[in-house]
Length: 130
Length: 473
Image 1: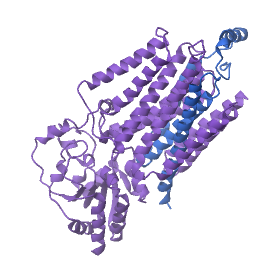
Image 2 (image 1 turned 45 degrees about the vertical axis):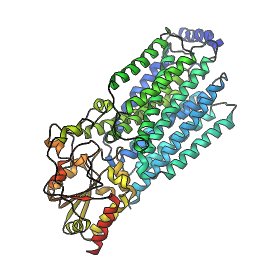
Image 3 (image 1 turned 180 degrees about the horizontal axis):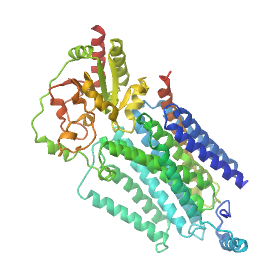
């Protein structure tokens, strides 16, 4: 069993000690429960995700290189999720909020623009198939 | 609730994977893009549903502005401007990831306890800085690429003495900063953060300016990969902050990062150059002087009328488009020429070099826009054996990709680069704007060959003239 996410958000500083002890408690009380370090989980995802990416892209015809690039570029706009989640953090700094809001806007440009322009390109590719 | 969200993210990731898979085949590509877009929509909705934000109006407002800009840009961009747009979008993606990192930094910094709260050791600080590094390099690197592609900046490489040393110093400083701060031996306040951001922004500029126009396909593919890596890095921040949303960022970013690297590799192989040598840049600087010592090439100019007659007598014609066709925006006129030739019973095909143009697949997009069926676009390896039985090859604004020197002259800067062997055909007609050298800055002995004729003039203008002459025959 992997007991990973003890908190849906970052604990506030005054919660830290409590958090730490909680972690230990969980680990101790369950005994056989393994606590996977989040960074380790991240590496698992990164490495396996990269392998999937490599496998998917090999053998793509050159005709599709540009749409593939702009389409995958739109997917990299997934940082919009990160930007949104950064908005939920405890209100501490106005600067942090505005930065997150700007990130929401930029990522939206990336996502919306990327998918739409890819669609426009692929429309042209399909057109003369008929 | 958390389990539902987690499961939802997994579904969104599945959509991305299937979307990218379908994007790899012509028949399913459009469907794949739509699928990926739905995955993104799903991921955003899930995130929003699970959040309790006070400032909804602001989030919606900013997202609305972003969507409007995205829609406008994607609708209005000309297909010839596609490399610039892709570069620009890359930059926005990288900046978004970097801003998420900086926002997290200040969020935690504003607390008296200062350092980032983490469950995973000092790692949190490292991932914040690494995200800023990748994001900032993507941003300024993409902007320089955009400026070069858009003609706002000279496309030729900018090199100076001690450049590599300077870049190395910047890189070492950045690395040292990350190591010292995350090990706790160096205090992190906002001043230090700004210095770090400044250094990473400069690094992005420094590594992109020495790269010349002809190497742009590599750079664009690489920056695409970086924007994915930046998203992955931002995912690590979320994850270490105890937020499950990080998983989808890491996986999606890894997919994009890996696919970008594969494209980068394909482009490098097509130029017979290592990624390392592209990144070092300055390509073509020494090349111009190296081959200038050779004998003067004698051109045999030809007019559009005579060209038309040669075309009419042909049975098999191969058209080789290059960046010059994109610059002249001649793709529609090229299609008209193709139709006119086909009316006269001539078999017309297009030979596409992998690095023709300024981004991977550039020529394919332009010709698709002009309604040229993609079955007519033949890859280099398939078309090369066909040149001996080809009557006429028309080269439009391509130079280095048809340079026989790559095979015959071991001292040529492009020696060993796979090229289209157009000189093996019966006649080659080369349309060129002027008598200048190609982007690699080297003489092209193709232009002096016995069976080569030079059709000087603006690409669009000459193709129109050629088509009209053909109609009159």
